[in-house]
Amino acid sequence: MEFRVRHFWRAITVRGWFDQVDGDGTVRPDGTVTGQLVMQAASLNTKNKQRDRHLRSADFFDAGQHPRVVVTVQQAALGPDGRLTGEGTLEAAGITEPLRLTADVVDGGNH
Image (cartoon, rainbow, N blue to C red; front, side, top):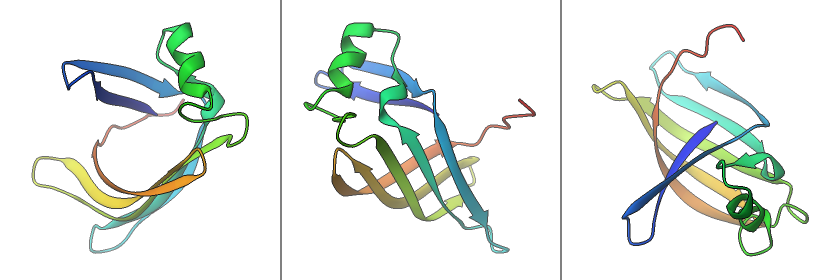
């Protein structure tokens, strides 16, 4: 799962991914989506070893004490622009927060 986060007063975008991701989802007949993604916090990768160690530390994800990052999608729908928008929760470092999300739908193919 790839992500982008704006950093430093929204001047820099940090890109990265989690190498270990699992999850499931349901698309209802009306096109709405629910589901859950579970990422292993220790698998975070931004191609910067020092930053990755810091993000895995107790300052951020606290991967040693909280090994999973969980995104639960309670409702989402495909918009006219082809992007998925929705609401749910983000659980990381033992804290659960409400989440508004926008995702690009990509065919992952057969890997």
